[in-house]
Amino acid sequence: MSILLIHTGGTIGMDRTERGYAPRAGVVEDAIAELRAQGELREVVDILRLDPLIDSANATPADWTRVARAIFDNLDAYDGFVVTHGTDTLAYTAAALCFALEGLNRPVILTGSMLPLTQPGSDGWANLSNALDAATMAPAGVWVKFAGNRLHGARVRKSHSSAPDAFEAAAESTPPRVSSTQRRVHDFGTHDIAILSIAPGVSAHVIRAALTECDGVVLRCYGSGTVPDSPALRDALTAARDKGTLVIAVSQCPEGRIALGTYAAGAVLVDAGVVDGADITVEAAYVKLAHVLSRGLTPEQSRAELTRLYCGEASL
Image (cartoon, rainbow, N blue to C red; front, side, top):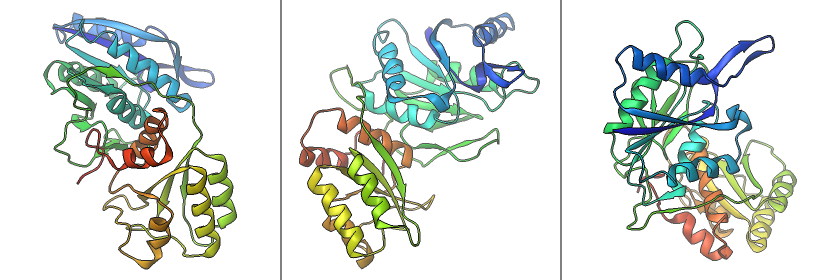
């Protein structure tokens, strides 16, 4: 079997410098050679390295498109794909690949590490080896392989800043891919999208300023979907709807889901056309907005698309 490894950068491929850890070309290539020398790797592995390598904190939607197109252009040449990536925005890229690769018929495995491969005791060796194995055995779709766990690409999130098992994902039976009889890749355009959190005393003027400047907003609400029921906030959300700004509501709680309309304090969201995000993660909601905004739809069509389940990004 053959695997294409796309190395984007991140901690797994870093080395120590005078200014701290930084990406270094050759680290992942050397690791593949070592795994092969130890007899742990039988598959053919080709490596495609992004140039320049990036710290994942600097990743942009344009990088999601670069990775998605690299996979799409090679679907017929390889049995599986591994993407090595920095952990800080790995969940965003995983979700992006779920949305971008329509009709995906290969396993795509994202992985990284909390310690560089160049450092003693690095978790990168196990993660890389496990990801390569998963690329030959996992079902078609986008998965994250980390600390021995295989996680749904559209449901995953980083839950710890430093622990080896830094990622988690809700259980989901829908595969992490857009099912289709046609294979297509969807590019991500350039749009202004913000993530805003409701907090006690937050000024409606602050919310209005953000909504005025943005094409889309992920609104992190209290609990199951409540916000302050103030005339100023109602006016700001209504103005955003009339302008065509897309707003999707998610919960600030790590568990549970949004259920707009349950409480009167959430009625303002329903009235303003805010989309109920159910139990979608912040990362997937952000990516979903970017995906829908890139399709050139009307605001009404876009809101309808935001309610559609593409790749198991939320539960029914």
